[in-house]
Length: 139
Image 1: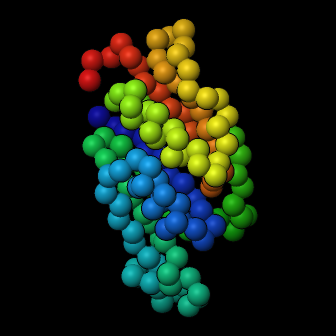
Image 2: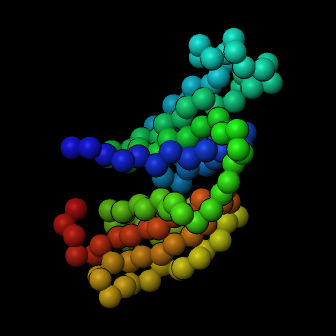
């Protein structure tokens, strides 16, 4: 099966943001710095500690990120959301509370007509999240 993994671009704070997501979501986090890569020789010295590639994994979840910003700059918008299906009510409430710290709770958690506990938020890094727990699913 083919999977799509969200890949976030940060402006120098990838390590901080991905560590925050690790604290919120759990899992295993791996960083590759520019200084620890073959690109090191081609990049300015000030970029050696920047993150070339970060990967946070937990079960089937994969969230990736980088500090490598395109030449046009970093443009944040509302065209991308990170949709997270949670395994239980306790998990969705915990994750929602953590991710919304210093961010904005756009749509508080509530039960929906489609039978899920659902809510949206924008985290302190400007990324939009949609959290869902289907109370009728068998996990």
